[in-house]
Image (tube, rainbow, N blue to C red; front, side, top):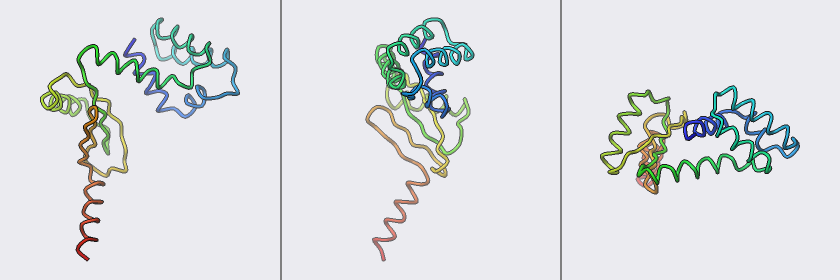
Length: 155
């Protein structure tokens, strides 16, 4: 179920149409439920995930589905003794890079770390890594901003 929910969360973030579907007050419960059921079936989601989404839809709460998924995954990770690292990079990370990053973070944090990666081309290069309340910003954009501030201080 956790994998299905992660996939659903990625689909919601990656699709403006799906985001509109879950947030639309114009569509009826039945319409939203049927549309989401079709999406989940096409994605190969399990029965439990489809029934869960049906209950959320029937209660007219699809607009909070991303928050529900995030809270469930956070609770699951907590119970497993895992941490989740949000990683933003300028380019898509390969599986090998994600694994190396996960291993480095595991050594630094002391627990198993799952990497949730996303891409922001505006970073130009480098990474922004957030684990819990700790954040490391080694992006080229931030370094250039710091250099710009330092140069203003000189002149």
